[in-house]
Image 1: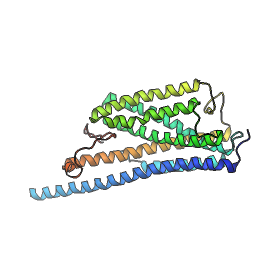
Image 2 (image 1 turned 45 degrees about the horizontal axis):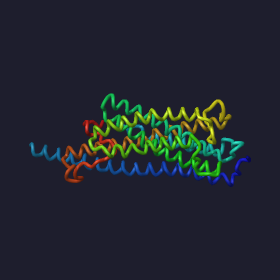
Image 3 (image 1 turned 45 degrees about the vertical axis):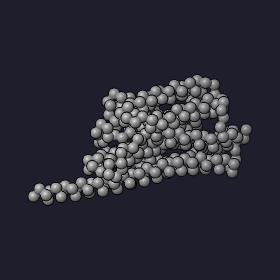
Image 4 (image 1 turned 180 degrees about the vertical axis):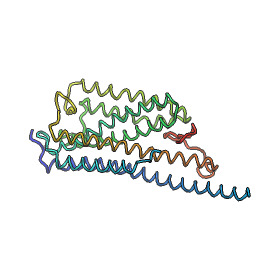
Length: 61
Length: 249
């Protein structure tokens, strides 16, 4: 059997590589969104803890 | 903890994957039999190897969980299975595209390599529903670890049986009998294997960082007494909580 010519094999190779990169990209995008949301919440909560600590310090004086 | 060094690791991974892509498409010679179509091999085979190795690694992490009862090992095992499942889906897609070009069919049911890989994937597809079905976090983690160990042991057995079976249509790789790669093809293949290994590690650490931050957030919320006000009762989840042992470090 003769190997497939470039114009026939090319779309298959491109399709496989695009599928691979697309799946990785979608995964990374989902994880990045979750991570950003969690980090934002974490910084808000840390800020809240600091505010509470400050107010309790003020009440203690 | 898990996010430390993630940025340089991500950059090295991106550079390795880009280098592999260039080397595979422009530097490696075309296969005498399959021609340009063989280029799919450089992404398909390393992904398949990493998928199976990831499942075995998850089994080893599950052993560590059962030995130590440390929920962080359960989380590591869970994330390893998750990443390997994503890689496995990519293996099935790239393999089907290759099969269509080489054999004229998207799937061949009488080939042991293809069917056994599908069986492994279907086996691991039950992992998340199994976790979700168990409400108690500690029992969930324990049962999931037993599953990960059993399924992880099945992977090398399955691989060995397939290698012993007569080859039908799927080519053999990393074999001394057939399928040995010449010169530049071998260099590109090992480069691809290195790049995909780095990709697996980077994604694993990326997800571990995300889970770690989420666990810290939940813990902080609970400490502040916000849990019941904003999110209601604790929802059932397939993902490990990391909080039932009180440690998120």
